[in-house]
Amino acid sequence: MSYENRTSDRLDATFAALADPTRRAILARLASGEASVNELAEPFSMSQPAISKHLKVLERAGLISRGLDAQRRPRRLEAKPLADASDWLERYRQFWEGNFQRLDALLAAMKTSESKTQQKKSMRKKR
Amino acid sequence: MSYENRTSDRLDATFAALADPTRRAILARLASGEASVNELAEPFSMSQPAISKHLKVLERAGLISRGLDAQRRPRRLEAKPLADASDWLERYRQFWEGNFQRLDALLAAMKTSESKTQQKKSMRKKR
Image (cartoon, rainbow over all chains, first blue to last red; front, side, top):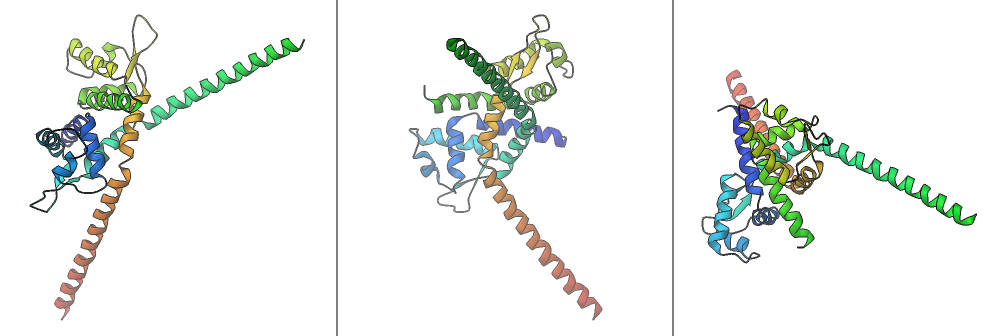
C-alpha cells in the first residue's frame, strides 16, 4: 500500500471517529489528562457497554491508547491523527478566509449603501 | 433545538462527509473553482451515479452548493462547515504541539547521549 493510501485510510478513520458528539466529548475530556472507562462514562447518560463501543472506535482510529496502569487501564489522547486531520483542513483555510473576506466586503458595501439611503431619507424630511 | 445541538449535528455531518477519499478529492477540486458533475467525475474511475451519491452527501452536509448556471448546474465549495470543523480541531493544537515538543525533546536527548557514547568509543580507540 502506498504512503498516500495509508494516509488516506487513516484520515477516513479519523474523520469517521470524529462524526459523533459522544466521541468528540470523550476526546475533549482526555485532552485534559488520562481517564478510566468509568470516569469517561460518568458525564454521559449511557451504559458502560455503549461507552466501550465508542472507545473501541476511537482506539481503532488511533485517536486514543491505553495508559500503563494495568488495573485502571486509563485511556489517553493520541495527538498525531488529530494533527493530520487538522493539517488536511488547514489547506482550505485560504479558501474559506477568502470567502469570509468577500462576505465581509459585501456586508460593508450593503451597510454603506443603507446609510446613504437613510441619509437621503433624512435629507428629504428636512426639506 | 439548542445552538450547541445544531452545531454538534452539523459537525457530525461534516466529519462523516470528510471520512471518504473520493469526497475529500472532490472538495480539493472545488477549492480551485466551480465544476460540473461531469468535470468532477472525470478524474475518478467511477460511474456518474456513484459520483452523484457522493455529491449528495456533500450537499446535505452543506459542504457544497449549486451554482447559478441552470444548464451546467456547477457545484461549488462552501467555506463555513470546513471552517467550523477546523475550529473544533484547532482547540487541540496546544495538546498535540505539546506532545510533539515532548517527542522532540526526547529525540534530542537520545541524540546527545548517542553522540556521547560515540565520543567515548572513539576515545577508547585512540588509547
